[in-house]
Image: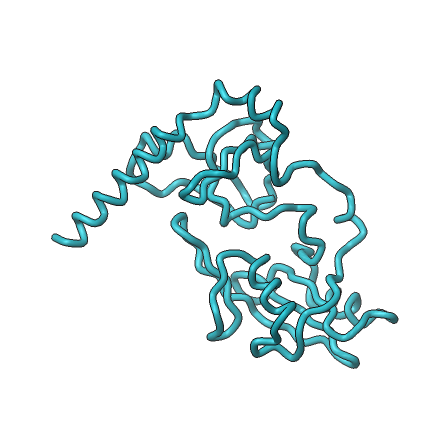
Length: 210
């Protein structure tokens, strides 16, 4: 599922024509996630178009039950303070007051909300809380805080997911071999795309030196 809108920004038309433009909430069938530049070959479930997408702009819909999208602050507090929820219960949602996301963590008697800062880039998106460490994905950030408090009120324990998220969509992460073979004919050459990306990087280095 797309975490935000995406439109290719490079000046290289050859690069752009292989990329998929998408909107927040769009879903994909991932056909190949092995590209060295962090690009995945996918099929849009809304337009049926096939092409490349930046992996940092999407999230596995059924992989992480702690991501509840547009859940409000008050709804998060209601869930995390429900009877039987252990201290350290948590969820991630879209922030209502600022750009980015929010991590809501329940303690014994209250809920503490942390803003997750986000730096979006085709070359590498990063997520962070306060002035702390930066992580390449929300999943990495959550995994870190499941082992270390790292400035939070406590370590993260129980993922407070919604029942609707337990319904598997079958869109991630690896496609079956038959799916890959079927789409091989329509997949742009990896070597060609890699060549385009490397040429773009080399051009950027020349501009920097000049």
